[in-house]
Length: 130
Image: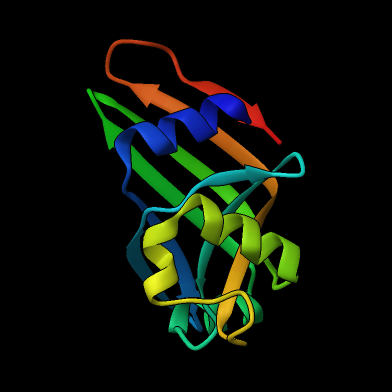
């Protein structure tokens, strides 16, 4: 999982895909943190992405940089515990302008059943499950 986290942090922006019925939706994300041995990202409960993941937690993430890309198939599970949100916001102070761990809107998303595949045009794929 650490290799996955390092890649996401190095390239800063990754793209998260969800589904709403039969329509896929993709949007940029930028928060990736390890907390209590799990990988997390963060969003707001009021956003469509949160509603889509509540209905169907299956998601896919893609990140690209320096001729390599990472795809993660996973479930993103809601975690709105104060401790988790406090940790995520402390690690990402720019989010504190939009969120607070007590606002009822801030949401941590925990990666579960994740299968991450690193690929490039010059190396064989490498898969990590966590």
